[in-house]
Length: 292
Image (cartoon, rainbow, N blue to C red; front, side):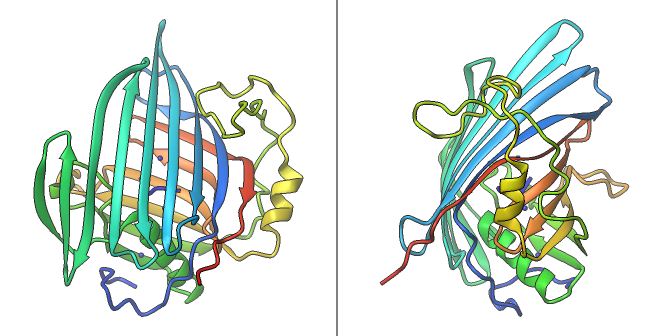
């Protein structure tokens, strides 16, 4: 999944000590619910649907959608974030488009591209404002996930990196500190039986339908079978930028179980004023494209 919806006490650079393996192409759906709040939110539910594919040789294509409904007293708000991105396996080229809707109305569109050039990440934004700027070399989302797995396999427990995930406020210099611990729970064992949405006619997961609509028992056993035998780790990750609290509090925190093929489960998303938690509700693994 994208970091922030994801490497030794040193910033990731082009000369990383551990080679990253390609991530498995897959499709996943997560149901989310409100775990805690402090901003007047009395209820919330959401869904993340994502598909990571490698149909083009040497390129990750990510289709990511995060829909959430919030209740504050008698008021309801529906947010819908839709991201499409491509990133090459080398982690040197990244293109992205993110559209955000609130109650069905367009709120914001972010579109641009970035590439690595030496120790610099060069960013060209097309929307919301056309502009170009340079960052210290920063890892892209898929590269970040692959490197976390590589560091975890090497037995490292604390990983720091500079990141660029397509944020139009990137000049605030996003960084991440990840704490990695072995995951001792069975594959998908934390995933309770959650209602599964009826599949749309296209066959593509639709996160906009509320959890519980078209309810069927979640294929927990099937998910466990797909992930059986894979190494996994609990990742606790904190994100910082120039807006971070002077006392050291991050702008966003998350924790999740990360499998060695790149699949995530048991999500906790801490936005500061509220926390959402959830688990895998649906998982499909695809065959990787064989490059000639």
